Length: 249
Image 1 (cartoon, rainbow, N blue to C red):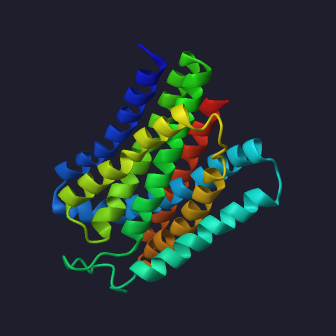
Image 2 (image 1 turned 90 degrees about the vertical axis):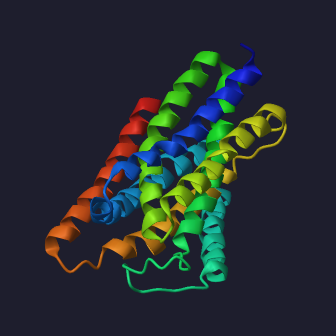
């Protein structure tokens, strides 16, 4: 099989992982409602860990430990802060607000961040395959391991934000297709154009979403037991992404 098809098929596989959220569909509504905030906390931990354990170190390796890296991190944070101001046309302080016309803006932010993240994954997979097929396969496995818990967490955020399950699956898959685009860009363009600035840009967006939108959803629960459970979920998200990083070494 040619290098081109290794890259395309691998990134299609990564895109299809977005359908892992279908597992959530087998849950009863009462059970889904019970675990949604757990998934939100888990997703927050995954985003924080992904930014600090993966994207920022990788950006430093590619761009050097200089002010440019931190500029792009702040730029990513600021862009998503500004973006949220524009899409925040319906605001609701009640976590139970699930009206079909209302969608919490974090769902759209997650989609944009995921699209950028998947694009970068596509670049990484293609770059690894260009170096060596075996390295490409290992990179594919590592990224898939990282994507599965993140996609489950993201799906939980979409449902918690008021989206219907079918809509969440569809848009999550569309976002996942940017991995294929990333693979194509790496194959045709990235060898002559440095796109490493996307790493700290995505890291900044991940930090903003986790700290500004996801963590506030779970930190004000009345019951101490719920707060502890959500904190454990947050830590588990961090630990899992950290453990995936160990596989890369």
